[in-house]
Image (cartoon, rainbow, N blue to C red; front, side, top):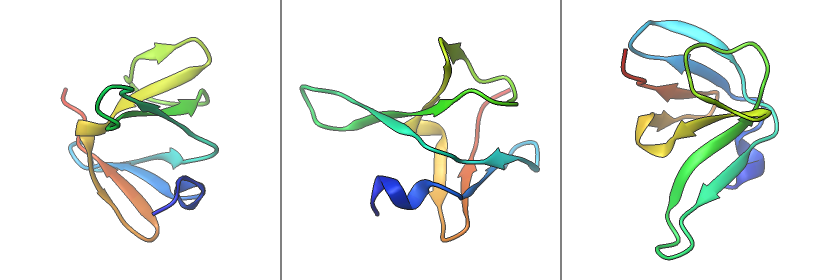
Amino acid sequence: MRLSELSGKEIVDARRAERLGVLGQTDLEINEQTGKIQALLIPTGKWFRLRKEGNEIRVPWKYIKKIGTDMIIIDFPE
């Protein structure tokens, strides 16, 4: 999957069973030493309890449970 294919997918929090919004343009945070994706960096808008960093929200990759054709399922702890 390409980064550009993430755009337009709905973001759903599995734990709360609620739609959180639609993913717009995103950036990836990549570990330079391992090459692994650390997090999605999403421009701020109306969001929930994710940590805000500047003008973006950081969603650690470990909380992304499934990326489907229409949505991204997140299981973010309470």
